[in-house]
Amino acid sequence: MEFKDLGMNASLLDAISSLGFIKPTEIQEKAIPVLIEKKTDFIGLAQTGTGKTAAFGLPLLERIDVANIKPQGLIICPTRELCLQITTELEKYAKNMRGLRVVAVYGGADIQRQMRSLQKGAHIVVATPGRIIDHLQRKTINLNNVSIVVLDEADEMLKMGFQEDIDKILNHVPAERNTWLFSATMLPEVANIAKNYMKDPLRVTVGTKNSGARNIEHQYCLLKERDKYMALRTLIDAFPEMFGIVFCRTRRDAKEVASDLLRDGYDADALHGDLSQGQRDVVMNKFRDKHLQVLVATDVAARGIDVSDVTHVFHYHLPDDIEMYTHRSGRTARAGKSGMSIILANMKEARRIRYMETSLGAKIELIKVPSSQEVRRRKLAHFVEQIKETPQDSEFVQLVLPEVMESLANVSKEDVVKRLLALECEQLLGRYKKDVDFNIDPSDSRGSFSNRNEARLFINLGTMDGLDSELLTTLVVNETGLTRSSVFDLNVKDKFSFFNATDVPVAQQIVKALLDTQFNGRRVRIELAGSSPEKRNSGYGDRRGGNGGGREYRGGNGGGRSYNGGGRDFRRQR
Ligand code: AMP
Image 1 (cartoon, protein in one colour):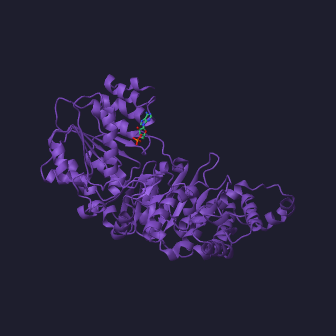
Image 2 (spheres, helix red, strand yellow):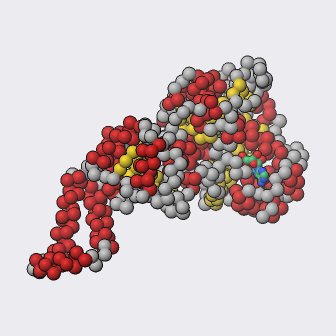
Image 3 (cartoon, helix red, strand yellow):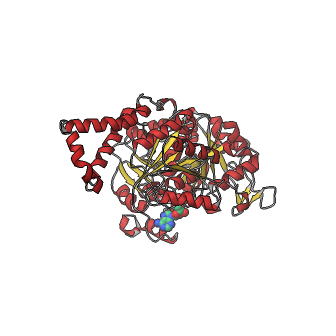
């Protein structure tokens, strides 16, 4: 399909062709024609880098009446940087639409200046949630003519605690408008917005870039740390055909879990950095040949494991970042098969799961560790299957059969079966006699995004700058002196990244240390977002100047520290 088939007018076609766009991307192909043609609500599940700005920007421009200089389109996005990027992008598409005005309003910049800009008139307003509320309260913006609201990076906005602001905004625009929502994942909060504010939205999903899209079911159960081992055992027993890897954070944990499993009668062994190459090969060969049912490994040691039949990956501890998680879970569902990735999460870890869902682009479903009764039921069902599949023509069996039949002559088939099952059951009874429930009630743990102390940060660096989560962590640690555990849930995208800091003061410290430094020749922009205005603006607290925020560019050697993104020497040896 080509751009000219999507129903756009000649002036937009000309603009995008001069930008060098040749073929529409998948989301553009799916979104543009319907959004131009129909007055519909819309949900686009797409990551950044998929061309989604044009996917909503082009149909939005198509729908603007330039003669009527009032805000007709409102785009809400999480950060100042995104506001500016979207504005620039729209201006490029609208280069042939004379008189069209796109105005960006975002927190941390001079509000008077934005008021003047709005006063001059705007057809499209691109805004961060907090700042648009400020303008609404000051009555310096009128949204009565808005016919399209775009919520961009909806999941990130909700994670930053903008839920209330978004509710307010959506209650402030005419009810008959259309809402177009873009998000990487359909988190429950995103689904709620759709439910509360959208009418029969058309839904379009485009491929997620992470391997989360493969045939992997992502699940987690919620446990006390001290119950993790028993829960792991129960899970292993609940999947009698399981052939899996248990990931631990440290060598010590890996050794301990493996030796406990061995003690309790499982075919398990550990793979970790204390082993010599020869020892590792022995363990790996045993696993590959299925002499082991469970391999307990550290992340480093498990790097590159390529065994095709792994059915389950267990995360005994959550990894630091999503890349590691993706890497771990990618050990299952290989060669076209399906697999399960199950996180044994304590309360603290569970709070991070939502962030992981966003970065992963997949839902991580809460499951319960099966009850003892359920494990017994599954084990017995499996035993029965084994009976059915076992060949019956062994010579020895033939030899003893007459004698056995004679001794069982007075016992019915049903009784034989009952007794066999009871016997098998007896072996399990010791372990699963008591019904213990390890599961914790999730309502205590996940909470809402805004009720937590953690703070989410945005930085204008991404993979395009040679960044990965390891390097981003190192950058923060080196600049602040904080520990590595102060930052987590890093989501490194192509042009920017999001990550979490343990609390707001830590986040502020990071902003202060990194703002306006240089990374690979780029000036670092970093923002902290949250639900209160102080939190929202803290990244720019000292920058309310007349120039729309932002100190003057300090140049290459003007004091801005420089980072070389390619410098692998930052990388911690794990
Ligand atoms: P986005 O996902 O909206 O952040 O877009 C990612 C980048 O791809 C932006 O720099 C766009 O200018 C560019 N882009 C968007 N659509 C196309 C297209 N159809 N062909 C080439 N580049 C595109």
